[in-house]
Length: 341
Image 1: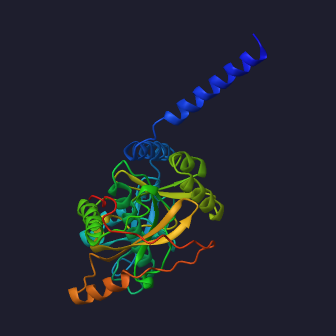
Image 2: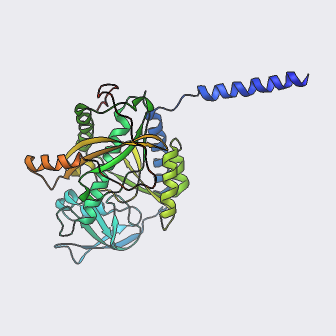
């Protein structure tokens, strides 16, 4: 065989490999969610198996009318919610977050040692921790809605969620949509459609299941997202234990920088108020989805809500390390299909 012929054969093989790689179908959003759920469930099962026999722990409960209450619970199995069920229905219904030895603790996260426990509600004298967890949870809910709002024909990437205080007026979720949607501007009906999607999840009263994992597990879970893999590495480097916290809500798995409240049903008034263009970044045209919500225990009159909503429509400014270029002017709200709930 001549050198020329051998070279030609190698080139043909290489071209066929490139063609087969290019032809490989991109996994659908449903397939990606299925893979993430499988990794989450596998790791959750592995962690539960670390406690093969029942060991008892003592939980000292604090709070109005509860000081001196001592519960005997199961190590690695019982959660703050399990403790609430030994108290009253009021504690089960109204608790949103817990303090375990003074540390904010999700209600569904198992207790691994004897500890002190305080159940937190939105009507506590100092609701700062639970309010911040609620704001973070509302942003997580918005990301879940956005992930399924667009047809499979359009890709979308959930970027890191800005950690903004409740005083900012709106919770936020940054996304990069398919480049085919760069010229699309959401109409009021599009925002209402996203709101309906969130309200459906609220009506289902889904739990936010926490799971603390090592980076290798999170990297496998987010194997289809370079953006999330970078976020995993960043959060792990900032964690004292070198771990990251995952949450699952229905079939949606997310990465969180802090605790979330117990369930979607704690949200009451909830509205998606805006989707702002932020300019181009590493993942394409960045957009900031914003919303407003109040928990079940706190309601606002419609006139107050209207003023709060007007404020929540304005772009929440989050400091960024890199400057983004201005987005191109959109031609029309109807230049691309709106999201469907």
